[in-house]
Amino acid sequence: MQMVTIRKAKQTDCPAMMALIQELAVYEKAPDAVTVSMEEFVESGFGSLPVWGAFVAERHGEIIGLSLFYIRYSTWKGRRLYLEDLIVTENERGNGIGKKLLDQTITYAKEQNYSGMLWQVLDWNQPAINFYKKYQADFDGEWLNVTLNFSDR
Image (cartoon, rainbow, N blue to C red; front, side, top):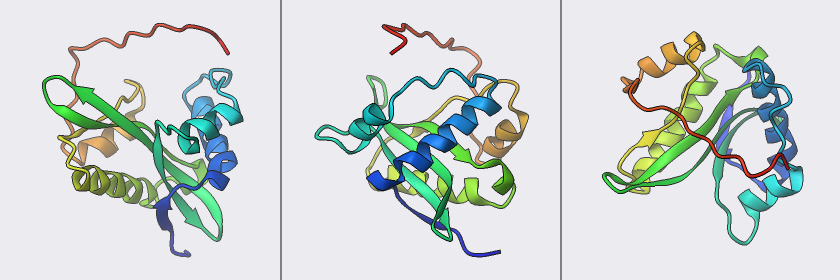
C-alpha cells in the first residue's frame, strides 16, 4: 500500500473535502442534511476571516481523509480545539488513516497551546467510539446537544 501524506488543507481541496463530508452524512443516515454551499465552505475556510482549519490525508493525489476543526473558547478551560469532523473514505477505513489525522490534529492543538480538544460522536457509531477509547477520551453523558437553526440556506 502506497504511503499516505497528512498535510494542511488547501483551497483546491475543497471539492474533495465536501465529497467526504457528504459521504459522512450518508453514513450518519442524514444524506440531505449537508446544506452548506461550496462558496460558503471555501470562504469560511480560506476567505478573509477563516473560521475553520483542516488536515487532509492524501494518497496518489487523492484526498481520502479529513480532519476539520475550529477554535472553541471555554470560560472554564480557555482556548480548546473543536474537532468538527474526522472522516476517512469508506474503502480506506481500518488502514490507520484516521489515527494519523487525529494524531496530527492533537499535535497541532498542543503546538497552539490549546487546553484540550473536544468533539461529538453519535451514540450508535460503535467503531468510532472504540477508536476514541484508544485515546483515553472522556465520554460525557451529562450534557445535551442544543441547536438553534436560523435558516435552511
